[in-house]
Image 1 (tube, rainbow, N blue to C red):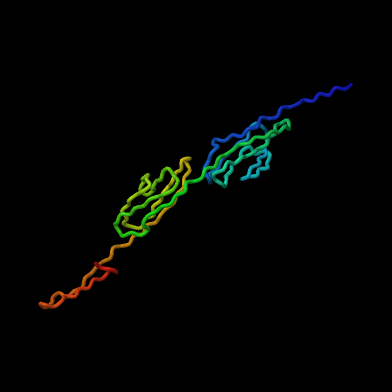
Image 2 (image 1 turned 45 degrees about the horizontal axis):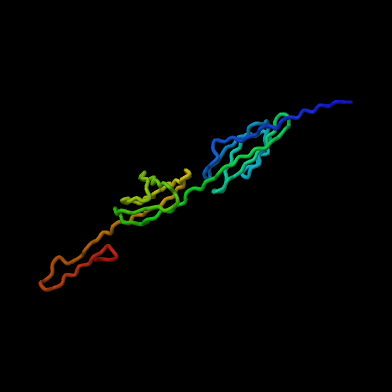
Length: 193
């Protein structure tokens, strides 16, 4: 009789580490595989077939979804095991800026935003408000940064053009005879009151 001993090696404990598990759309996340000596990642946003890569950086391309990333790790004994990591991707806030895009020089404008953010910051003035009332004396682009409940941000802007006040002149005779009508002409505008 011949005895043959076979050692049964345990599977490696593979896990994925990352400093976050929730990000905003267009942000990246870096994940590191642990517990093995070589790794093969299989994820939607990156295909890393190099057996020596421990760390990958991905950028999910859709919001309001949870992405699952998988890695297979192999130890020095040739034993393999798998691990997965889920990342929630939050959308950027959506909003619109309203108000007059053309205004007379020196007049007050009313600009306001509507949307699903919890905070709006007007970068020109630093005000955190849904509405501002700027006095406009030159063409200005007003920028707004919106922040959602989950910390995601988006920006938009509105350009306000300035219309100068018309220069009004009146032409009239300097003297008329008693009983005659003095005809005066106004110039410089399109309508007169």
